Image (cartoon, each protein chain N blue to C red):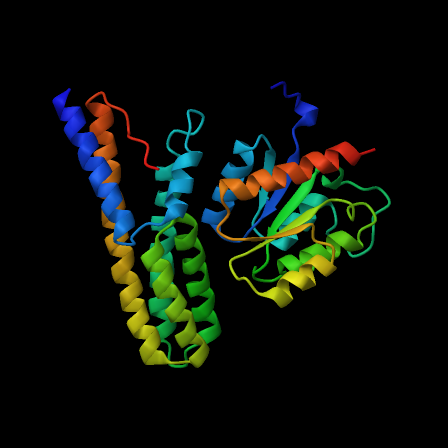
Amino acid sequence: MAAVIQLQRQFIDYTTSLYKEGYLDDQFTQLQKLQDESNPDFVVEVVSLFFEDSEKLLNNLATALQQKTVDYKQVDSHVHQFKGSSSSIGAQRVTNVCVHFRNFCEEKNLDGCLRCLQQAKHEYILVRNKLEALFRLEQQILQAGGSIPMME
Amino acid sequence: MECYQEDVPHVLAVDDNLIDRKLVEKLLKSSSCRVTTAENGMRALEYLGLRETHQQSNFSGNGSKVNMIITDYCMPGMSGYELLQKIKESSILKEVPVIIMSSENIPTRINECLEMGAEMFMLKPLKLSDVKKLRHQLTNVEGDKR
């Protein structure tokens, strides 16, 4: 029993820190609210889609920015996608980088774009690691026979 | 709450972003809607049976079975606005409420859509409270139907 309580405590503290540090915003809570008995893995499913999609987008962005003549419309289109999907799952810091990224696309500023790409990759990897850690904690709680605390 | 199959509203959700499609689908299903998704305007029109530019006398689409259409504004190829236009130009589908979603809060864009006959404009990302509003909209439409 003590193990479960400790894990639940860890979960609450970790989740709170993720919101406090801006990795996640309210949209993530919305996803959790949508999860129910008919769709118990909804959050993991959507977040997994986000991971797959993001990795593709980051590769596409790298390729697009390596072209001799950069097509900024194409770059912007990828960033727009990335901004949208990160915003939909609540990955706030990724979304924020995308906002700056789009501005550099409009200015056709290659240097700015390349820096933003690095930042976007960095923030993406951070949030991915944190979400994976969060999901692992959830699994540990469930395996120990406990339930996932509801965060408000 | 009793729920007969015929009473469940059928919504067509159009969005080129996979994550957004999954999210809007879940949001609508959580509000007791039947959902069909389309990844772009062309597919949506195909589903609705409006693919051809001229009205077909033997209408073979699913348009008559759709109670509401919710579409993203920014899509490659046909935009949500263009899709809205085609729907409002159709004698068969012009009464179907169309909701436009966008991640960008641009007043001229919003007005343009409302003037073209969009029922509502919603900011992305969509939340549960947004879908509750939609649900009310659907109930009102149901009440006036036939």
